[in-house]
Structure formats: structure tokens, C-alpha cells
Length: 140
Image (cartoon, rainbow, N blue to C red; front, side, top):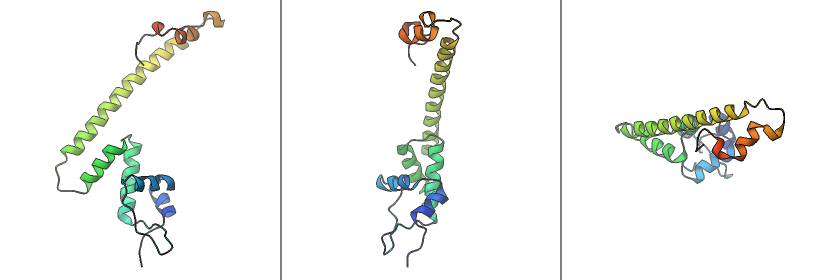
């Protein structure tokens, strides 16, 4: 008899929704589990660890491709960790870029929202949205 938990229990244990677990199987992020005679998927402890790894990586903002690479590295414990470090550093640089962009957006919207006029005809929000040249930043 095959051992493991059905997909609903795997979902509950990992915090990942059932359709997302199926999607991860479909794209090869999670190996296809064995099935019962009734064709129900069964997930073992290794599958649950892998699902929690994926969920945590997604919560930290990692995309699917880097997660796939990190999972492959995790499967080779004697391998040097330079590759994992490189993936994390690239992700950190992307986060820093997003923070800079969001900071610029926040500054622009705060400046735009500081509208003390009483009519739409003189409204700073409407003026800035209507003319990108009124923005502090040319790209945002």
C-alpha cells in the first residue's frame, strides 16, 4: 500500500492551495506523486518539505525559475553554495530597484496629492495626471 497524505492534507500542511499544488506539478516544480488505486495523489514528507520551501521562497518574492534552481541545489547538499548566494543577491538587487521605484512613486503621488485648490480646474492631481512633464521623475 502507498503511503502519504492526499492533496487536501498536503495543502493544509504546506499552506499552498490545491490548484497551485497541481500547477507546481504541471510545471515540474514538484514531482508527480504516486496515486492510489482510486487515482488520488499521495504526498510524502519530502513533498511537504518541498512545498513549504516553495511557499517560503514565493513569500520572499522569488520567481519560479530561481526557485527551480534553488530546489535543484538543495538536492545536492555537497555542492558549493555560490549559486544560491548569486540567486539571492540578484533577487536582493531587484528588491532594491523596486524599493527605489516605489519611493519615487510615493514622492510623486505625495507631491501631486498636496492640492489645496478648491476646484478641479486648478487641481494639482488632475494637472499632473494630464501632463507627464509636470512630474518630478520622467520614469515611474
